[in-house]
Length: 491
Image (tube, rainbow, N blue to C red; front, side, top):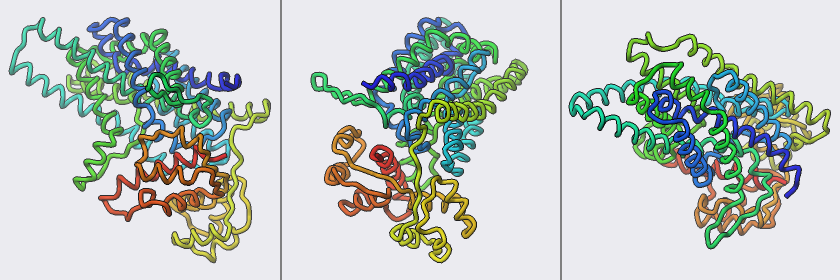
């Protein structure tokens, strides 16, 4: 293994430690704060299930986050993870909760700004909207669950000792599930930017295959576990005691409400079912578990009149949420400047955009005005920003048109290496898709869309379907797979 990789990955491990120190409070903070569980018990359960969730189910979330950011050099990944980690650490240091999702999104935007990459504003606005919706939904679920539990207790009137023992068991079971989902969803924040540059090789241990990505996630999840043990108690008490004094039953309700919100924004099964029923689907975007847990706690407090909620602390936490992405973006920009200009490291692969004759024809097929594009042709642009700035002198481009122009004209070197094909997650692809990928082993393409066309020519399993409700899930999944291939196979 290249020793420089150990140095660069240290920022990801630092982010993992920060996540463990902060986000364990989202799962067990109310249980520890209400004294239903000891900190040592909560930390042990949390650590074990975080590792399991990251290694077993972490790949899906990593693919989603990877499609949001185009970080393509290990020094850039180092700076992005370091900026997110420092942002979270500073808030944890002063005893406030922070969101690693907000931090990593802010850091990626900082990377885009520094390297001249264009941020997809539609995606960014969708994520920002969920940052508002997430705590509101959690608060609503907490209120509804409180009413339901209150009705059930009045109806069946269990003995206090029985109720206490069942509540403790429910807190452990729910917390274990929450820790598992935390590992599965948030390991992408910690290690997702390092997948493309991982030096690990797949291992086969007595018939059990451990992929290079799973080995990477194991490292990240162990860092999270260390963060849980060494620094999470203070934030647990902030969520569980200082924000609002909650009863044991309320503590369980808060964790369930938090888990429901994460499930809504993360479940592909639910999304597919809504589409099958002809209903609007919920966007699958990373949401902050921190915001969900705080929203649920405030919902419980409002149900009791709102007098017991520490509104001053709520205000401080809100300021932390607003500051986190901004601080992460600023730190990331500074780190990238130092790495590139003082240490002379490459923080981003050089970008080239060229509207060749083939690209011109493809853009015309997509409805672009050929006459307006003509002044842009045969000129190589060094960044997305320069191309879009030049194009807007001749065309009116909304965000979708900007993304289409950038996608079609991005000039790269996409080589389908047989070894890299073998390292892909085989279970993610259908049999026909897998056979088509292997059939193209050894082929090289200049443009991303040429690779997509070559795959589509081999099998309908790689072809975009007509934009109808019944095809929405297939097309989303196809887009995600192609984005993953572009990132993996670019030399």
